[in-house]
Image (cartoon, rainbow, N blue to C red; front, side, top):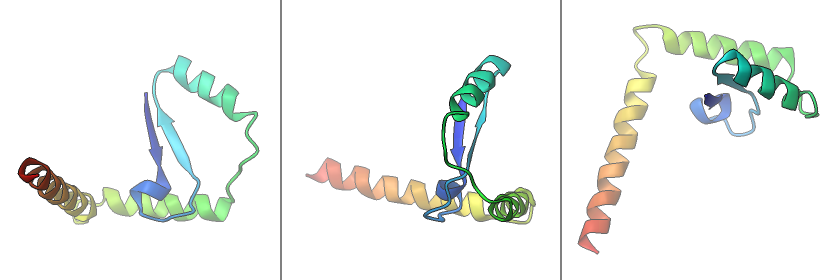
Length: 85
């Protein structure tokens, strides 16, 4: 099972929209649990996230690659600082 959040992926604090990828059994259980949650996003917000995700899928968009590089750089800085302390 994989759980994703648009707020985290898009660095958009406050967007409470996510999705789960998994087997049918997992999705069925998540759907049943979600039934009892009162949070609901607007269709406008859902459309904005959809368009943003489609933009990220464009092969010419380098956002994910740049984010990965940035995270690796930050990791390397942290590992070096920890090793030196």
